[in-house]
Amino acid sequence: MCGKSSLVNKAKPYVLMVALQFGITGNVLFGMTSVKHGVNRFAFGAYRNAFAAFSLASFAFFLDRKVRFKVTISVFLQIMLLGFPE
Image (cartoon, rainbow, N blue to C red):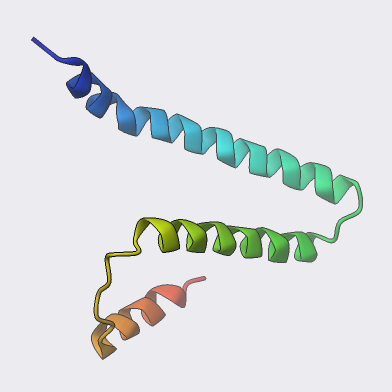
């Protein structure tokens, strides 16, 4: 027999994907509205990236406070390599 926790664990990825889609839709609608009201699209992109960096940094600071890994030269070069496609 399937318990509630098992059902919740199975449904979690789907619920998170639907929430992500709503977030993306909200971002697109907010961006379209902002540009229609006269915000420069380059300035909007810069503000959006700054907000995303601040949001992710705050989550990382509070949720991964006790988890630290050693940044070796290999890890640093991998991070830099993954940053180049941006």
